[in-house]
Image (cartoon, rainbow, N blue to C red):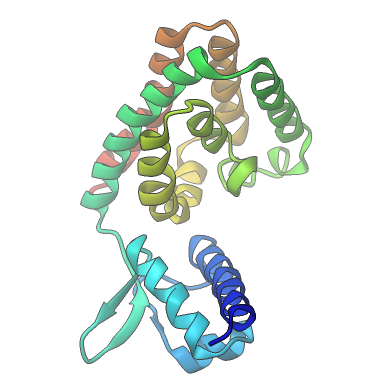
Length: 221
């Protein structure tokens, strides 16, 4: 295979990886749903080679799972596993907030405030659409994790945990509180980071995530 063709295949694999991951996270494909290669290849307009590479990457992120004699399906999280992940998030994102208060530059903090202002102005706050349903760089938690400037922590949270839990955050946040309350809590965390108060930033972040965890624990039937 020549270099140009190999690069094209990598580009296609990256593209289908991103699209399939987004469809899983946003609930287009339900947990436990079987995904056929032929249908996916047609949906995303790619051959099976790039598709299989994307599927392997999503299996590594535990968003997909391959079942012998069944095929590939969307991985499901047991409630117990989800609660465990929220416990890990509470600890690690608390650390991320502490380190963000120490490490974020002035431009990063200014960007955090701009993000919160954008969120406040968006219509979904008035329409009661869950505040948490954001993607990538538009996600407040994502920004703070990146702002910790700790590569190991970033890798653990953003590559291992972040996408597994995202598809469940919409339902949790919708039942837990109104978007305005989440925005207010985010603003207080940002204030602590801007004041370089790492201890307070960690406390507020842990409290923020623990509320969602306690909601899950109380609904563990």
